[in-house]
Image (tube, rainbow, N blue to C red; front, side, top):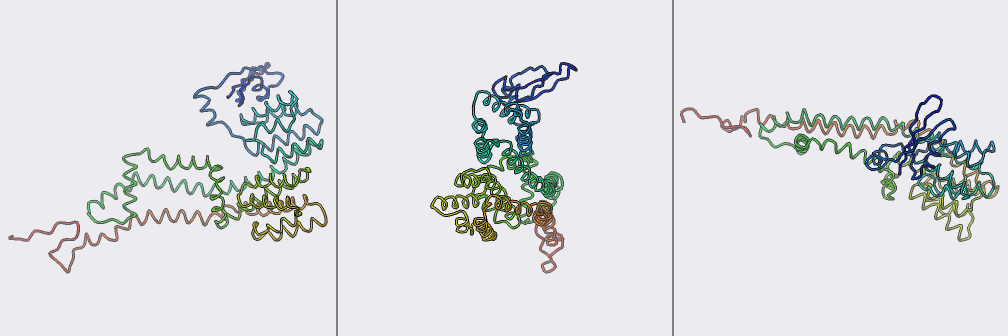
Length: 426
């Protein structure tokens, strides 16, 4: 349930409206971040209004998560109680889901529950690697250091993702403009051309017939013009579910350039998670299992789970990495060699973190030129669209000579699509 919390300043009377995703009024007040100089009014958001709010409200983001853990680390460093620290984070949060989760975590701690158990009640916000780190921080008594580690990992990943998303702006704009041009031509130019070709009574090429049929459909059913837009919105909205399909991940990994970015991103995230978990003294087998899930890629998940199985069979981590190095492609042997050296010298988690940093530097360079990497694919798409339209429109023109120019070999025979001239005196 959604709660609308209206905060009113007792000095100047100004009001602020905050939406919190919770089913309790007291938790809604905590999630809204009420200050001592504010009065509060809480109302329920139900029915269609709730549906509209859930459809349009801000969703939790990686940046919000990084800010949340960063603030918690600073508060705990200054010996502020964990419950108070969590409540102080509420005004900094933007999404109703995070506000509600913070309120519930705060109430859970006041009720005597463990911090890790309170976070575990919100698996959509806090993944298994985060929960394992928090649990390790509780056991070691260094929760603030763990929160710093979580913040660092999220900020590094966020920086790369922001650059990659920025590189997608150009190709998305080009594809959207191509769709707009196709729709405008379907409503304006194509109907006029189709009338001209129909009067000639000639056989049209397949591309032209498809274009004319598409134009007729849009003219008689204009609401179909919204289908491509809705399809794109649904596609991007459900991208995480689509990408979770193993066959989709494997197919994308085989695309030149794009596949390289996907694999390096999965390697960066999974190796950094593994390094953080080992640094927090999480059991190796559990750390590998969590790293497998954090990779968000079926091939890397299989690699880490295979390494875990080898360790369960009694092999060391360097030996296990060496046995499964082929799963990591060209970098596999190099990574296995580095881990073998770490096995002799110690500092496995530092080596894993360095591997993640190396991948991060490579991705940083790729992200800076991401739009140039995608440019060939964009040109192919744009060229196909423009070339297809030109061929569909002008292709039949090259065959009009048979209609317009008389057949000199058979003077009495009319061109196709035209009536034969009358013979005088007949």
